[in-house]
Length: 305
Image 1 (tube, rainbow, N blue to C red):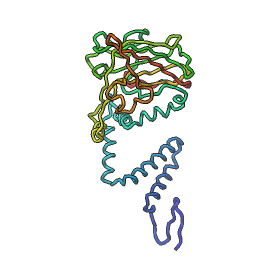
Image 2 (spheres, rainbow, N blue to C red):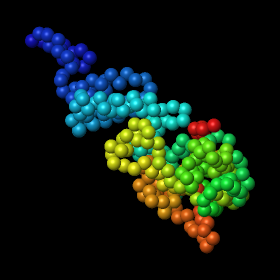
Image 3 (cartoon, one colour):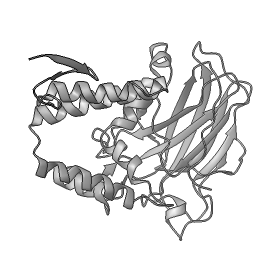
Image 4 (cartoon, rainbow, N blue to C red):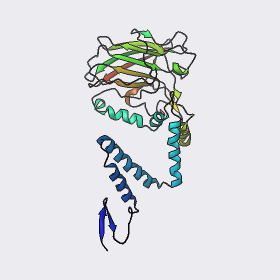
């Protein structure tokens, strides 16, 4: 009997034999198919994806019937996504993938004392109102305990950054952003500030409340199947833009929130947990220091108009 080689496989002369019926031979064949991918980054991503998916199937001994479940889940992720909600982003959030990407992107800055990043989230709006330092971002009819925020924007070596743009937004004491709540005024609990020559900015607001991520779609079903809650701890969002520095998107969390240490999207990392200090009059105070890394300034697009 003689053999010949076709597409990396030996073919016997007494008959045509297909791909060897082994998991390793199958994996090798799929990787060979991907080897023609001209984009090097896409090739690397798909190589890793293929290897990890095949390893997962073998590790958990996935059955064909079980395969239908995640495939149906992914279809429903797409069906649940629309102009007001991105179920795919929510999935990456509740699995900790989005936070992991943020941390990996910032690992160099973190090693040099930079502020930890956090998710921008789906509620940042374009054209948030420019306010004077010391101004109030909460409308007069917004209930809740007053919160005073005093902040500074610094480079990694501690140099104050003058003229930095600081955007902030938060949920109300009811746990709702203004675009979710018809009772709130337009652009309530939102503001844009510019730092002074000492890198300082300040504003007053109300103490925010935590809130659940949306649970009416497949991600909510997954959380329920895992026996997990859907809550995010109370927090304030910050996005800082300064020429010659990388954009910082982060969140500062209320350490006294009941879910401060088990955020459903795993965003409350490192020094982002903060004490909202009470005063004798029932108000609260928060000191903020935001350290930016040098680099190109790429401003993301707001998810909401």
